[in-house]
Amino acid sequence: MAVNPVESQFGSVFSPLPVYLSAGACIVYLVGRLLFNLVHDDRKSFAPGSSLDQAEKGSLKQENMSDDDIFQLEKRAFFSKTWLFVCHRSRFDKPGDYHAYDVAGISFFVVLGKDLRLRAFHNVCRHRAYTVVRKSCGSSTRFSCKYHGWQYDDTGALVKAPKFDESPGFVPEDNGLFEIKLITTREGLVFVNFDASTLNLPFNNVKSHVDLGSCSWVDGKEVTCPTNWKDIANEFSNQAQWAQSPFEWLSAIRKSKSKVVRLLGPLSIIKELDDDLWCTMVLLPRSSSEVVVRCDFYLKQGHTAPAKVLEKSKWMLEQELLHLSSPDENKSATRSPYFAYQCGGRTIDLFAILAQHQRNEKMAKRKLQPAIRVTGTAEIDTEAEALCDALDGVADSPSLEKCSRISSLSQTLEW
Image (tube, rainbow, N blue to C red):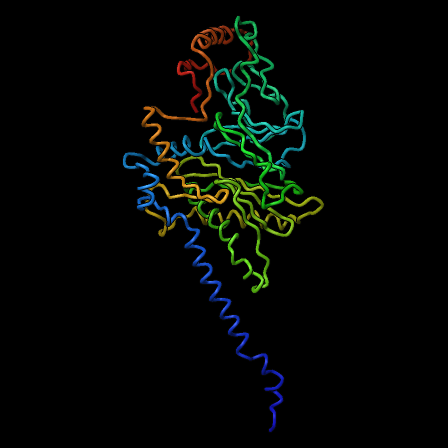
């Protein structure tokens, strides 16, 4: 029997077996993604109004709340009590280097002390709550208030208070900057928590999925997005969940290496852009309709990235963020999007946290604000105000704004 040489040479190439394998792989991929979304999409499982949410977690009462009311509740119940990633240790080269941030109106800064320890402080003077750091970043081991020259060192201690140190009963040691709890992991990840009563979590005992310990900061960019912060936070959560899909082996079939994407808390994500290039993206909510996204780029030590590569990466991330914040008819019609994220194998439900805080405030008959710190007593305020009047009248004193006449009778620092 004669054999067709063409069929003999190419028959195996056009064999239906490889076609079946490719088709089967595609089907497994699609089914796997569907199953993954069904298992991990907690927003559907615990959507507001569902029987589980109503029965076990309660519901957030939004009927008489404006968008700003909900945002302020998020500030009191969530932003003020959650460990938030802010930056990487490599952003601080020498003692005095600092970076300032603002999360929902809570202004603070992180500074590297002479003892090479990172500390975070509320960006308010203990006298009249005026800002002591006015730039987004810089280097200084002394921080001064413009009102009457109160000066603090890199440990937050009050080192200078003109005229006040002569006032009877004034104790400089009791008037340092309010410190914020800060933790630096082995990989150099810096987290803060505004709740003064919170416990120090053992982050250093938790192995990170991302090794940034051998990386250094090379560039950064901020993108302002006209959208609710939860719209972008939900996308971060989705990207991180899909990157950790149990079907990652399919990338081998596609002959492409899957990039690492991980959450760094509820407001941050880290992405592997290239073999040696990483990027962290941190959400800094400004209001119910605006959020600033801080993007920082890191390279492994000993490696360099061409300027064109960095510029292209910054442009692509900016376009991605602007696309996420653009109006979308498919977005939920509710004022406040639902948000949940994975942390330590658990699903953290934002609405459950807000509902619980709302109930606690109802029982306490007042707003509970963990980020607020006690500033002093009414008697001290009276003496300080009298001293303000005297200082404002001194001819050789610097030209400064008049002292605030707002008394702190409530003994709290209102943001």
